[in-house]
Image (cartoon, rainbow, N blue to C red; front, side, top):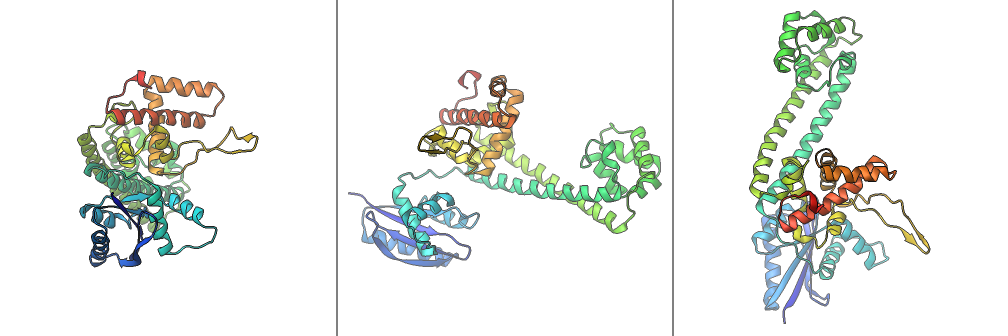
Length: 395
């Protein structure tokens, strides 16, 4: 008979707490803490091995809670040691702990025991994601942070233009387009633009707009600058130049990262790329967040993981019909799926017809888009499970 050992670990920044239980819930080793160091990891391995020696022919399961980046090194150590840990959603751990007791008790040791108990109730043990999937997840999360920082810089840009040259947005497509950024970097105020020569202004615009903006546009901008109410401030002009340099820096970082993402997605050769509207960037996010699709036994479980399933409410004779999306699970995956559904609506006739049908039923566009997203999730589940390309008739 195979004996099972359950190891629950509560992860923190500087130290972790561990609880080791047997198949009936008895403690096989006194709860202990170990530092987030090489010596601490070795202590964990030593204590686990001592339990394994006392229980020959045993199988071990290790569970821990997803805690941002704090669990990354520990997970890597366990995998290197031949142990594939189960990483639980923090909400799942919280609800399980609340179900165990009505007492409002929360300590690191209690959490470690709770995770071990949750591990006992969960028979699943997901397969380790491939190297490409792990790399994709790190890169896509990094890209999201870069995009966020670029967005913050663009907000600063908008604020500065409102002070230095508030009339400029009225005559350009976007204040963050390459030609306008180059113009403002060279002449960072309405006054400096009004005083520059028309040839210089035309040269900057034409060079950075691939010839679309010529002397007429330069003349239009300079005339507007001469009538501008913008403030003439050397300090704000200096800040504007640095903000533009920040935007350019983040943009270059994102472009370089996108090249890396494309190479990794090409290595995976995923059928997701055959779906109209899903390119390398969206495919990278979707694949990295889903991981091994075999973790999900049905499309509904994948929907729940992405947080795009509708909430349910029923009490007595009442059953709610208009409920909101739960929005739990991976926010990165949910965003990518919604974007993919929006783009597929433009490029896939079948999904477009489905969305139009929902809107014809009186549903708001975003409600209809939510239905299209759920349909797309079922399609993605089918393609990844069967490893076959997209065909309109399988929708």
